[in-house]
Each structure stands twice: as C-alpha cells, then as structure tokens.
Image (cartoon, rainbow, N blue to C red):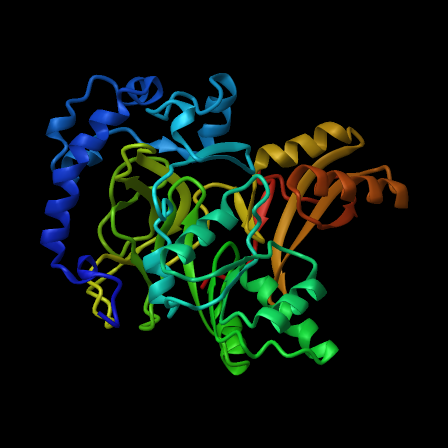
Length: 410
C-alpha cells in the first residue's frame, strides 16, 4: 500500500467495531487485576462489555484526578496490571502525572500517524520533543523508528545547534511543536542558514491554526498535526484530506457531556473520553478534559475510522501551553508562595504564532522585585516562561476562573 499504513485503516466501520469490542473484554479483565481499576470499576463483568452501550455504563476516570490518586497511592494509583520490571521507561508529566512505557514496538501508536503525514522509510527525522522526564520525545521517536526512519534526538531549544544538525545531517522530517518549527525557520532566515531539507512535519502540543499551516507550506513544508496525550499516545491524526483528525486504530473514542459520562449525539461538542486496548497499560474511559466533536462521514483520504474536529477547548480550566499542561492547582501554588497576591488569573493568548502566558496579579504590593519573583515562581511551577502584570485589587472578574484560555479555536 502507498496511501495507507495497513488494511486496518480502510476496513468497514462495522468490522472495526466488531474487532474492538471482541478484544475489549480481555483488556478489561486484565485491567481489573490491578487494584486501582478493580476499585474504580467495581464488580463489573468484563465479558459483558461487547458494545458501546455497555462501555458507556462504566464510570469515567478523570485525568484531572490522577495527580491526587497517584500521590495517595504511588506510583500509579494501582492502575497498572504488571510489575514495574515489565515496563521499559517511567515518566512524569506536568500535574504531576506518572506514566509507564511498555516494551512494545511503537507503544504509543505513532507510526501510522507519521505515515499519514508523509513520513516514509529512510526519512531522517529531527525530533525536537523533550526526552527529559516526559514521554513526548519517545512517543515520536518510537513511531519514527518503527517506520524505519533514523531519528536525531535533538530535543527542544538550542536553536543554533539545531541549525548545525540540520545543515550536517539534512533531515527530511520534523517532529515537535509547531511554535518551535517556526522559531527554527525564522532563525535560519535571520542567519542565512539552509534548512530546505525539511519538507514534512508532524506537530503536536500547541495550537496549529491554518495561518501557521499555510506559513509552513509557503516555506516548502507540509505539516500535519496530531492529538496526543502522555497517557494514551496518539489518539487522532491529520491526513492529506485536512478534514478533521482521524481516530487511531486500537482506540475507542466517546464524546460525552462535560462533567458526566453520557455520550452526546455525533456532531455535538462534548468532552473527549478514550479507551485504549493495551493489556499492559489499559485506559478505560479516561476523560481527558478536552472538548471536540465527531465529524460526519468518512475522510476523503480513504481512511474509514471516526473523525473528530480536533481540539476545541477545555472542559475544565486546565490549558495546554507549548506542549505542557498548566493546571489550576499550579496557580494556587504560586499564590501560596506569594501571600501579597490577593487573586491570580493566568491568561493564555497567541502572538506571532506562539502561545503567550500572562499572569495577572491583584496586589497592593507593587515593585519590580515582586514582578521578578512572581515570574521566577511562574516558570518554576509550570516550567514555562510568562509575563507578569500587576493589577489593582478587585479589578479581576470574580468568577472563580484562575486560567483563562483566550486563544482562537481552530
């Protein structure tokens, strides 16, 4: 096949559902051997989980609850059915949320998504996702190597060194955030460096509006986006059709009414809930806190799996900024460290095709030193740099919101 990764992508929806729900009972039976899943799911009969209706009767597990559950019952709150020695790597993501990586080839299901983005065997890939503590770098690395692509484990930052790598090793593909790809291209233009070897990109972790996609196309790079999480890997991915994101194989997706586990009709915006068929790392009805909706019909690219509109905002106040989650609990920690601040509100916007954070702080304590201290704490807690703006007491809205994501959707 030249257009599709394998025959699974073009099977009929009924055949796909029959396969998924024939396999689900065994995955759940394995899951409930772990004490966390046994507590969460109660006395269910895994053999009865042979339909979407049966699955929808199970309780959702909220991703936002995982940090507290894992803190109370380390390391994984009892949601992993194998001993630690079974897993190849152990990670942490902001929250913190801890995740294991199985020893399976392409454990994060990235290969077929890269294939859909045009990556092929032999393409050298510059991978700029972080390899340090978090799984992002390995999510892309494992998928690229499963395709037979040599990987440059560059990680983020060090832009001029990245240009040296590109000039010497001539990668064809880029994986990383779209924001960092733009930084690389802009720095190359500024310094007169040749990065024309990069003609394809697979991006995630930040907003990817059509304006940025077109900017890349204007510089000779066809870039496609993925919807991925550290818990599940690649959930859905863009194809050459550029009409929504196609759901990955071995993943069951539901769109539910936020705050509930009740599926909504196709086309209605709701919260994304995922179930993955990985016996060693089962995920059963994990509510991600993201909003999306199912698109009607099949993709013109020929793939027959469900399509979603992509990321359409958050069902809660958690925001993903430059590939990292920023949570209300983190803003509360900043407030705890600076009692002079009476109220805080983190505003997330876009400028020059990059995410921008501004921490607005109500305070009567105005000084440059206070602004500097707040900025250092913001970076220390979130691992992201942001602006700090001091405002008068009582000037922020009294609406309970501590993170305001004001980036355009789409």
